[in-house]
Amino acid sequence: MIKNTLFTVLLLLLVTTSCKEEYADLEDGVYAQFVTNKDTMVAKLFYKEAPVTVANFVALAEGEHPLVKEEYKNKRYYDSTTFHRVINDFMIQGGDPTATGSGDPGYKFEDEFSPNLKHDKPGILSMANSGPNTNGSQFFITEKPTPFLDAFKEDGSMKECGTYPGGGCHAVFGEIVLGLNTQDSISNVAVNPQNNKPIEPVVIKELNIIRKGSEAKKFDAPKVFTDGLPKLKERQQKMQEEARLAAEKEREEREAKNLAAAKELEPLLAEYEDKSKTLASGLKIYYIEKGDGEKPKTGSTVKVNYEGYFTDARMFDSNVKERAEAHGMYNASREKQGGYNPMPMPISPDARMIQGFKEGAAQLRVGDKVFLYMPSHIAYGERGNPPVIPGNTDIMFILEMVQIVE
Image (cartoon, rainbow, N blue to C red; front, top):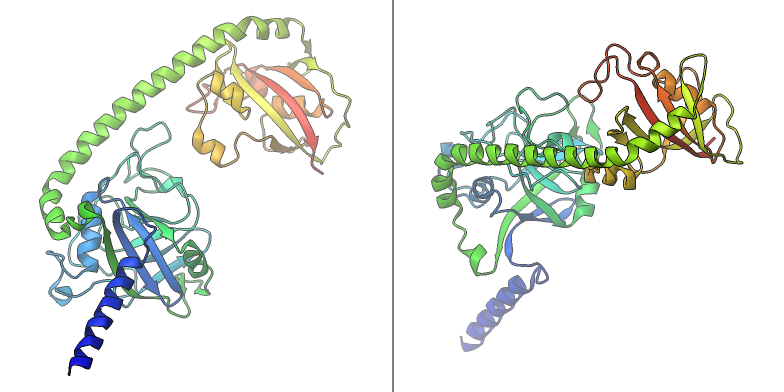
């Protein structure tokens, strides 16, 4: 009897120690452990930035959500569910016990957005929805950056989520911190092309919540959800107004920086224009630097650096990082996507570019750097390029040919 008791105590100690040592390297916080038939993933949940959304997810996972249908009460909602929708190079979606994509827990709740939480990397955990304020239990995990799903535009202002072209708004509430390779392997499973449902089910055997640290252990999901839900709409409206004001301030600062840089640059661009040769089309061209490289043949692809300016020397676009920074036009998201690298373009009269840019590039050899002045009829014409360039607007470019690709 004593031996059996000692054995039981030792076993309990071993189990307790094992649990404590599991994920010992993770910092304090609230985590979700996805135990799947493909392996395990662990997500850090942003319970401070998105408390109501995290509380909803945690309460469902632990079988303690106060609003679920009777059939789900006191049941660990996500256990034995599947990733029912898998799109490679996009995301994997789960959280529907019916595995149809139309299942729900019996309620819907409002969106909870934060300008600091973005779909900016693989492994972002976010709420699936069917439109604004239709969150329930379904979620997805990104396989690559999907900024078109963010609630906020690049300038920090909020999208009109119900009508915004190119994607709706989804509430980020966590990110995978362990097992990103598992997410990738799930993304690569064979699916039915009609509905993107895996041919062989990808099962979430268990979805366990891990609380590390004294603060995380105090996170009472049902209470946080119940107390926070009535205040969510007001909090989101306040945040939206703060985001609007911040975006407006940033826009004003950028415009001021662009204008200051333009005042310094304008005399130089005016000098280039005075020295330019005017071609039959009306394009003006001046060689700032003469290269000695090869001249590309029609049909070949080249890489170029460019700076685009209005006639008062305000910049409207550039793939040269240093110049964009000088004019307040730098964009961090663009840099992540390689937007400040030399741009590939075809040397062809049929290239889908404005006429003046095509004609100017066709004059160059590798190493040439030129100033181009384009009257509106060989730029964006009467229509312009809204919202950046108005109709009937002359524009200028500094264009440098870097290399011939093929």
